[in-house]
Amino acid sequence: MAADQRPKADTLALRQRLISSSCRLFFPEDPVKIVRAQGQYMYDEQGAEYIDCISNVAHVGHCHPLVVRAAHEQNQVLNTNSRYLHDNIVDYAQRLSETLPEQLCVFYFLNSGSEANDLALRLARHYTGHQDVVVLDHAYHGHLSSLIDISPYKFRNLDGQKEWVHVAPLPDTYRGPYREDHPNPAMAYANEVKRVVSSAQEKGRKIAAFFAESLPSVGGQIIPPAGYFSQVADPRVSHLLCHRHIRKAGGVFVADEIQVGFGRVGKHFWAFQLQGKDFVPDIVTMGKSIGNGHPVACVAATQPVARAFEATGVEYFNTFGGSPVSCAVGLAVLNVLEKEQLQDHATSVGSFLMELLGQQKIKHPIVGDVRGVGLFIGVDLIKDEATRTPATEEAAYLVSRSLRDSEWSGGMEGNRSQVQPALSSHNTLGVLFQFSEEMDMEEKVRSCETLRLQP
Image (tube, rainbow, N blue to C red; front, top):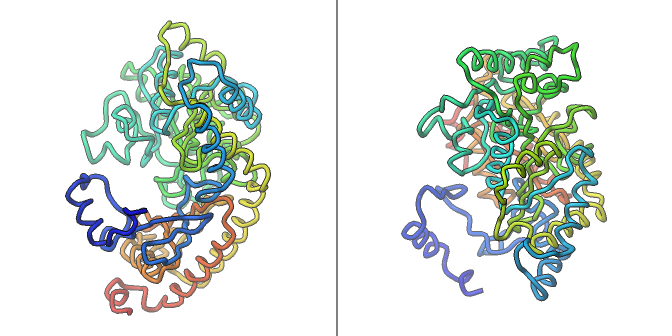
């Protein structure tokens, strides 16, 4: 394509002139110009190949031929809105329902994760008649105004916390107040939610929802302790005093699966299922991966939640949500996941990656923690084992060095490296071997000054 032939410097200059600087680039000091991708690989304008390790959108691999074909074939026949009867939307809803607990049986289709979370907030408020929301610290749920308000990751740099938003500690057993040596971190962190709810109620506030990513991603690739969500939300587990928490307060539980669902965790299709077979959210939101790059998103809700919304008499209509093409793409992604057994693949490859990273942790003191499940993995780099001081600059150096050598495109939040490749990835092991080589410089990695001296 003609645009791909433009010199990189010209593309960068045009972007700087025409696109807001708020729309940031990866690796801004030396941006990568990606012109094509296939499977787990991305290619720049010079033909250099990168392993995409943050592909939480191209879930079954970039430009998967079955997904591309499904979109193309449906586009040749019909693409219109969901006010007309069409098989694709009901077929897709039925296929999704087969992956979820039977209580989650009403579906809404949208275009983005932000739209999905915004609708989930509306559903929760209509059902409960309440306004307030409990969220986890460092959370990010989307870019709409309603979602910035419930995303501490964003609002702390903007207008601050609204009075109807209540923030509970992130259930982080590596850096949080209750760590890996605590006898019952799930109970301890759930009690923090109880404290937050009680404090809000004392001020006359009423809780509509507890919003949480099933595995907090922007917050640091966190794996909540098993049983935490049940103890926060489910009144059926009475011996855990859950009746004092979210549902006792009249709220609903919203599980944000936008980055972590659809088989990424391997052993389960949905990350919330890691919390136990008896835990069922009231609302589940999904996006990103479900369209493999096509703008598809979905909200699944229980019958009571959906019926309360319907009782308002206000129509929910989304111009492009649930279109024949979007649903054809969604169905194709599900077909690929099943045909190529990618959920099992995520388990086996993820387990091997965790094993290799665990070896690096033993070998290199800068690797403070390795955590993950399936192909959702985080590596926490530290300056000192006792204080766990984040090794932010060292982490940035390691990523930029690997990128410069055209080995991989990885994600980094501060000192934490994110590994979320396509579920079809088979050569992410190469990344780990490169990571190992970089970490073999451990004696030199101890200070940023010596890091910068490396060629």
